[in-house]
Amino acid sequence: MRRLFDDELAELDADFTEMGMLVSEVVQQAVDAFMNRDAVAAQKLIDHDHEINQREIALEQKTFEMIALYQPVTTDLREIVTILKAVSELERAADHARNVAHSAIKFGSKQKIPVLEQLIGEMSQITTQMIREVLAAYVNKDDHAARELAEVDRKLDQLNHQIRADSYQQMRMDPAFETGASIYLNVAQDLSRIGDYVTNVCEWIVYRKSGQIVELNPANSDSPN
Image (spheres, rainbow, N blue to C red):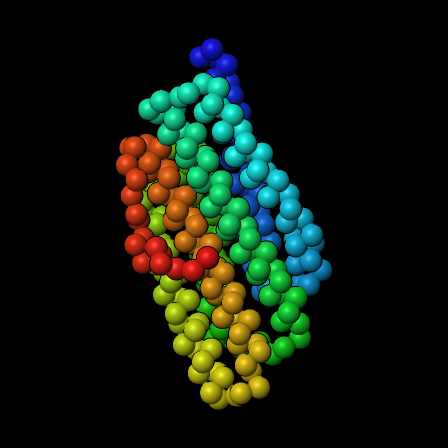
C-alpha cells in the first residue's frame, strides 16, 4: 500500500509541476503579447485557456481521491494539501494572464506612453521571474527561497501604484488618453495579482515544509481577485 501511495504521490507532484510550467509559459506569452501588441498571439493564448482549467480540475480530483483512499497523515497529508491549494492559486494566476492577453487586443493601435511602457515592462519581468522561481522553490522544497520570493511581491505593488499615479497624470494632461490609461491600469493590476497568487503558493511551500500556515505578505490579504 505504501509503495502504491508513493508512486501516486510522485505522479501527482509531477503533474502539478507540469501545470506550473504551463502557467509560467502562459504568463510569459501574455506579457510578450501585450508588450508587442501582438493580437494574434494574444488570441491564441485566450483560445487555449481551458487547458489549464482542465488540469486544475484533474489535479484537484486526484488529491481528493488520494486523501479518501489512503488517509495520509503528517508530511504526506501536507504534501497533498499543498498541491490542492497551490493548483488553485496557479489557475487564478493564469486567469489574470488571460486578462493581459485581452488587454493586448483591446489596446490595438492606441498611442503608447513610454514611461508606462517602461513600468509595465519592469512589472512583466518581475512577474515572469517570480513564476519560474516559485516552481524551483516547490521542486526543491525550499521554504527559505519561498519566503524571500514573497518579498519581491512588494516591488510589484510599488510599481502598480506608480503606474496608477502616472496614468492619472497622463489623463489630466490629455483627456483623450483615458481609454489607453484604463488598459495600462488593468494590466498593472493583473500583473500585481499574479504576484499575489505566487506569494500564496510560497505560503503553501512553507506549510509543506514546516506545517505552519503563514501570511507572507499581509498587504495582499484584502486585495480584490
